[in-house]
Length: 329
Ligand SMILES: [Zn+2]
Image (cartoon, rainbow, N blue to C red; front, side, top):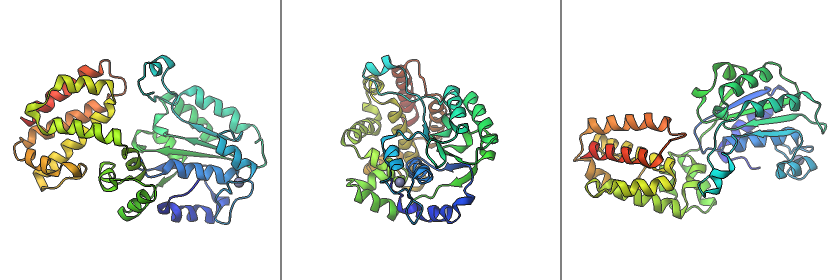
């Protein structure tokens, strides 16, 4: 489990006084900057039987071996349960939903029994905003009665969605973000092509940028943006049909970033995300009614918040594309 270069200062600060480590940490920050890896490294450090000089897990002892296998008896990783099996069988990607109260209740016994090995126990919750209200309340009880040997590591992309009472029980850490140079260096080390474009699409988050650097994904995106670029030729029925079968959330994301760029191209002449469509965006920006585009961008943000379980994805995408047409024509 390697730390990222932009996390080393924070790591050193926390490890300077390991005995004063709070029993619950809330690691906050945008997606794709390595928060979960940092939490896992902290958990591993807590359980490792021969930590290194800087406090990091050794990677070689029996405890580290079990962690590597995901089977250490004193560690739990709580993540949203995947959707039911028949949905996955239809070939659609598995969607992730809530972290449930049953998952949190199972922790109760886990943190209160004495640990299997000599060390402590570690619980990682990712992402914490996936805790549904009942689960969050159950967790609160556990956090209120801390077991000195347990550490809770909550990872969140959206701390504003967490119960204030959960936040107040945790030591909050705003996770460090890489500089552009650190992010580019890391992407180069990981062999990512089109690093500049992917990093821009990811809003500067290197891990997200690495996920975007997938030939199929980038090609689908380019196809979709090509249709947005020429609204008069947009065959919205066809695009909606294809999009609904593929990754709906990605389409919403592309459309949202496209609109943000369109607005920015109109107002400032610059583009933040779609570096490969600068001239198309600038060209289109000259012809649109700024207020209508802004209004549509706001509506889209509202719709996106309710996107979790659309009844009819195709119909939704159709109506969104129609609204787009109306907004830019
Ligand atoms: Zn170890």
